[in-house]
Structures are given as C-alpha cells and as structure tokens.
Length: 159
Length: 254
Image 1 (spheres, each protein chain N blue to C red):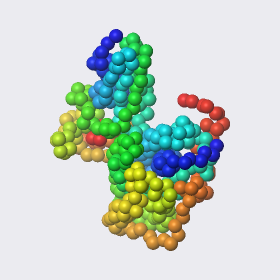
Image 2 (image 1 turned 60 degrees about the vertical axis):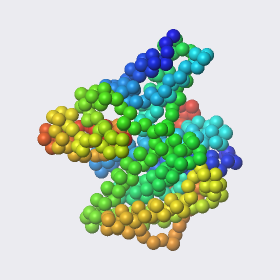
Image 3 (image 1 turned 90 degrees about the vertical axis):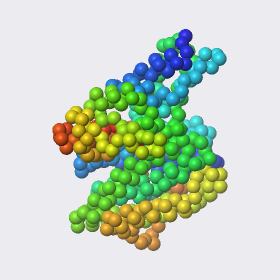
Image 4 (image 1 turned 180 degrees about the vertical axis):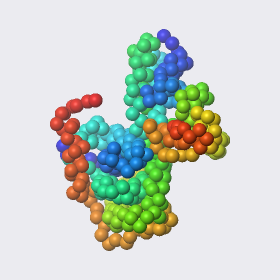
C-alpha cells in the first residue's frame, strides 16, 4: 500500500493519449488524490476541453493504475470547476512540448497578461511567426507558420 | 418514450443540451466538405466542443429529472417532438455563408448565456459554463472573422451573406423568448433573464455586421416552437440520420 503522494506520482506518469510525449501530471489534469480511513481512493481529474475524447481513456487508465497499487476501492471523479487552464502545465511539460515540435503555451502573469509577446518557432527559434488557423489537429492546438524557416508548426494555445 | 418532466430546471438544462447537440451535429456534417482544410478542421473542432458541452448538460439533466437516463438515451431514443432545441440550430448548413451566419448568431447567444450561467445557483451548471465560456469565445471569434471577410469581401460573398441573414434572422426571436420554464429558473437564480441576454446579443451582432458592411434585416415573421418540440421540416431528417445506427443496432457500443 502506498500513500497519497505515491498515487499522485504513479498516476501522474500516465501519458496523454493524444500527446504521448506529455504525462497527465505535466498537463495538470490530476487535481486531487484522497484516501479515506477505510482505504478507498478518490482521484479528481479535470478535462482540458469539454469534448476532449482523451478524457475517458485517461479516467480508465488512472483507475487501473491505482488498482495496480493494491487498492480495491477506486473512484475517479471528473471535476469541471475550476476550469482547466494552460497555466497549470508544468515547466517540464512545456519543455517536452517544445522538444516534440509543438510551441508550448505562453506563461501568464498574475494579471493574466501574457509574459511573452510572440510564439517562438520550435524548429529554428525565431519569433517571427504568425497564426494560420486557430483550430488544429486537436482541440488544444492552433496552426502557425514561421517567416524565417518557413516551417508550419502546431501551437498549444493559451486557454 | 415520452417522459413528462415536472422540474423546470431539468427542462431548461435539456434545452441547453439540445441546442449544443443539434448545432454540433450540423457542423459535423461539414466534415470533409468545407471550402478549405483549415475550416474543415475548425468546424469539426467547434462541433466537438459543443458535443462535450451537450454531454455534460445531459448528465446534469439526468440528475435533475430523476430518470437516470444516459446521454445515449437522450440523443438516440427520443423522438423528434421530444427535442427542445431552438429552431435556429437545426437549420440546414446551406452554403458556407449560411453556416457562418448561423454560427455568428448562435455562438454570440451561447457565449452571452454561458457567461451569465457562470454565476448560476446550480453549481453543476455553473461549472459546465465556466469551461464552456472559453470554448464559445473561440467559436464567436471564428464566426466574427469570417463575417468580416465575407461581408466586406466580393459582391458574390456579400450577396450570399445578405441572403443568409434574411433566411436566418427570423429564427433569432425565439432565442430570447420567455415562458413558464425561463420564469421559474430565472426566479431561482439558475438562469439569466432572456431579455438581458437579448440586449447583449444585439449589441455585439449589430457592431460586427456594421463593420462587415451588412445589417440585420427587419422581419415581422418570428417562427417559434422548438422549445415545445415543434420543429422545422429539415430537423426530422437530421434526427433520422443521427439515430439510425443506434436504433438499428440497439445497445451498440464502440
């Protein structure tokens, strides 16, 4: 038997079905883990977008993963509020996205203002990029193009 | 399967869910047919957001009406007359201008509605709204961009936008209708006053249309009935197609 932190760590390592380079902990999808006196586990997860088709896979995976730790009573709850935001993505997650060829969401300050004006091209590092389409391969991505290296690349849009 | 629901809140959340579902289904019909690849992806992405919002609202409806119905029961096992979506969302896709005008009229309404519902006294509705606000903002931006481009575009695109506005604007009166259900949920703080939503909606739509060198046509014809299950002709065909697989193979799962 393991504790709350251990469950959080192990379940957090589950890869996102649509962006397997990232774990669900990187994305900030696991909100809370609780174990009651009788040993029943409750895990709160939150969807990135309302219709995200990955959510059901994630829910089943989290449940399976906690059961594998020796817990027989496991409930995975989907909580909608507070609504998920890209501000919950970890630094490690942003770095992995960049490596994967997807420009990460820009960080925001306490006043919600973006701390960086342009989205940087993940291929050449240029800041001369512009949006081609606001909707991309998944709900969380937009499509941009780079004026310097001419590559078209996905951007995980701030949400 | 006809179920009479006593709680106005359940009828209200079902209206929200049906609006999202039907508009989602219409947009999904553009899959592989949109004028550009980017818009094929945009319209189906918007459809997916709306489907997610619909699912969450059906789940809340099932708790409120106490029937324990599943999302599939609501979508696949109700007859046409049991759907309580507004008439605007069920109108056919037509040409791209028609779809964009329908998107502008609908997404502006939905965004204003979700913003107001963020402070609903029903906590679950407020939670769903807080997610949906972000998504509907993208939907309205998308429709606004295209309205400006097509309205202030060529004679052809301008003419098509005018024709779409003439065809669809009459259906917008129904969005702000007051009846026993809206009065009940309004009094309980679950839902906003339709009249206030109407003012916000008008202000935004008229500003965008003016910038796009278009205007909202005056109409004395104000069709209604969707909230009571009385739909326009194209809707029956849409429901038949949507339900065919599930009805032919009961209990079918992915």
